[in-house]
Length: 410
Image (cartoon, rainbow, N blue to C red; front, side):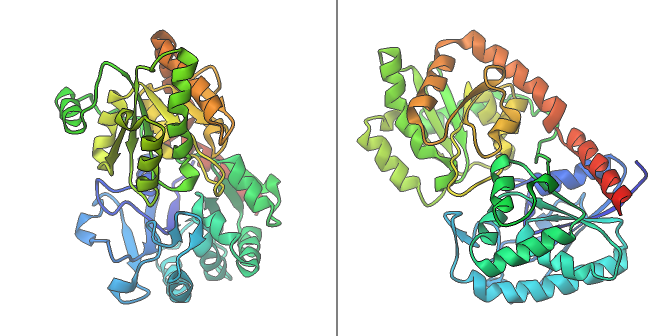
């Protein structure tokens, strides 16, 4: 494909090398590797230090309030990822006005061939307005939390429909998100499934680092290690994973030789700890807290299985940790929601079960705990599937095909 000038209009970037999420930064770098010109436009935030941003990327930050009040995004706009924070409606008009003006200016100075808009709200309506009369098309991508916002109020739903109608293409990374937006009146047939992926580069195993992790958290490496990564909010479904542990024991007829490693922070941490205590499995659950992004690969090397028990509370997209774990040859035990079904092929690179089903999840995990050879085969299959569909280079190729199709229809 000929060289494109692509403007990524987003609401979150990696603020430093150890920050989550990294997927916007990694997508921009993948576009650059493919020979395209890329710039990122995003809102300022009180936590962003320009000196720590990735120097390989061209990033423009627009201001919408005094620095200490710039608190939209980065997990601060939604409470438990389910409802708007009280301050969001007060700050949103300022963000909307400043963002629309900044995008209009950037269109005039950069003259992009295409704008790739991430997070339909708040960024969709800004793109819809800023592109009027410019002839510049935009693609709208739904990562997850924006769907919750769209459904929060009839006015937001109407704005969301309008933004989708003006977009040249719509993408998402789960059937659940597509169906949730379709329920708002957007034709489901307009959506394309495009993942947020990971680089093909594999960070080497660091045995010294792994030994330090085990010492710090008291991890017994002789047991099967089940890893789960994510914010401790309802939609991750971690409570069902903890509830599965005693059920695994009953299935195997003994105390299962497994330890659950929970990586992440969030408002449900204390509740999950109390649940583990009540079920008598607290000593087999390691609450590791937040882990630096650059250290996550060592947790994948350490673990034997990745668990992703996502639930529709609310609808969500595919968690990037699933494809990252596949890259590191981990079999995946997951629910069949939240985009997991797009990459986890039941019986090939992992096992799938219904959401909110600790018995089903226990059966999936028990099978993998009992059969190390099967885990190895599934892990190898997962790595092959990752390279086929979930590496950033493959995803950029998918976007290029989508862009060509959209261009022909204009």
